[in-house]
Amino acid sequence: MGLSRLLLAAVLVAVAVPASAQTSVRSAHLYADLSPDDGGAEVRIEYVLDVQGAPEMRFELLGFGSASAESFWLGGQRTGTRMQLDAETGSMRAAAFTLTLADTSEPYHLVAEYWIANAVERDGEDVRVRVPVLSLGFPPADGVSDVFRAALEFPPEWSISEGFPTGLEANEQGVYTVALPVVPSMVSARGRTDGTRRPGLPLVIDLLTAAILLAFSFMGWRHLKRAAS
Image (cartoon, rainbow, N blue to C red; front, side, top):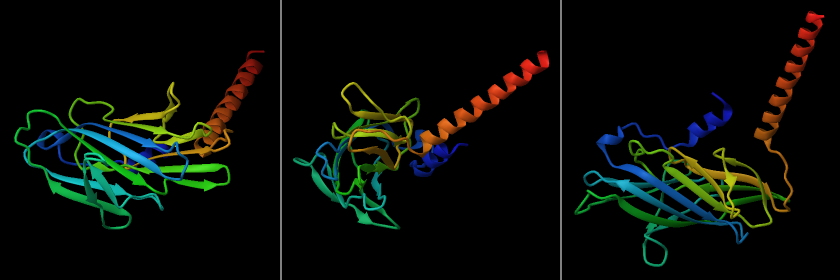
């Protein structure tokens, strides 16, 4: 198993109970706006759930360094309810309540908004972005691929060299997107504010691996040519 897969496994929300036995997640779509370039991220996440019974809605947010949040708005900042995220072990914060619906035959939609004040870490022109994901402890629904989708909007002058999870790419509007089969606890990126690109460690490793394979191929070709002559 590669390093990137090990890192991904370390931050995924793990649930052991079968999806058929409890409430499950049909989709989780996150949008993070970092375009004002003020060091923070305005985050909105929309969940669609298949609800079974009256589940406990436990929201968790794992902070990374100074990138964290102490509360969120359930239902939107203007019309929703402010929920406090209580400190738990380490950098984990959580809030919980019991959801009771009159009718659970239809998918349940919910929206949460929160602010990450220190989402951007700067070192000169280099930037590192960390966006903790407000997650729910439910498994993905059966038969649904790419449950989680994230879209990150950066200042237009920034250049993004790499992201986590891997696969973060810019669309036609310049918004960086990624999709996963499960909900991670963080989305992150590295880049520069001056528009230049510098390869990060994963890209350097890939380039070195390609160079080594190319060198071995060249030596093998020379050996075969010498043997044939």
